[in-house]
Image (tube, rainbow, N blue to C red):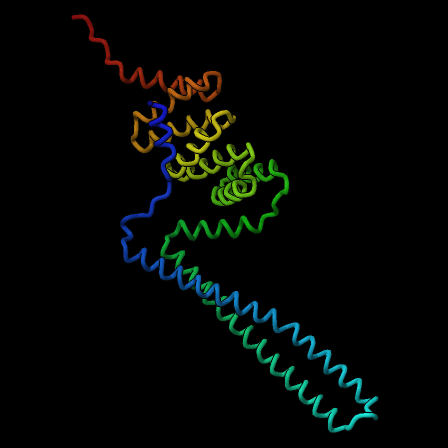
Length: 280
């Protein structure tokens, strides 16, 4: 039962919307998101219209070229007929170019407006959201290995270098690309570590809980238990912190993490033992 309670706690979602922002702010975020989605749809439509128009311009250019070439061999046709056909083609081409300019202008306006909306959304969501967005952009610029082990190593290296937000982006991407691979356990643990480094223990617990629940036989499981104990301790949940240590010792007695857990349990027991009264 104790283990079930602990697993339930570990599985609690780590991300919570800050209540102090209020409903008004949340409604504003939703409104901006809806506006941004609408502009994205308009941008997509404008790009599709542009893509459909460009081939027509190529066709009209070909027609103009053909008409010019036919002027030299127009002996069997009236010059007036050729002139009318040529003029019509030129007018069609001019109209298509005007449409292209309109679409390009609209696309530029929409892209600028969407960028401004994104800035407003990030500002409303706070500095953390801005940092996350910057890290995402930086992560996108990285050359990614195609090999899953090398990809995971890259994420771990970024985390060790202190670039936890970039590492978080890479771990998240790994989980999407190789969702059923055994290395997912290491990715969840690494993701938890990025949150732990920022003292975001609830989010970290969620990732450690994934390892403990879904990948109990993985090499990361003992460390996930140990880190969970650390998180519970930071959250002032002393009983849960102790349970995590006890479960670690019970389930993974030969692991290095279990050795640390035993030392911590001994310290806790020592702290609980009342000092002996001296003889009178």
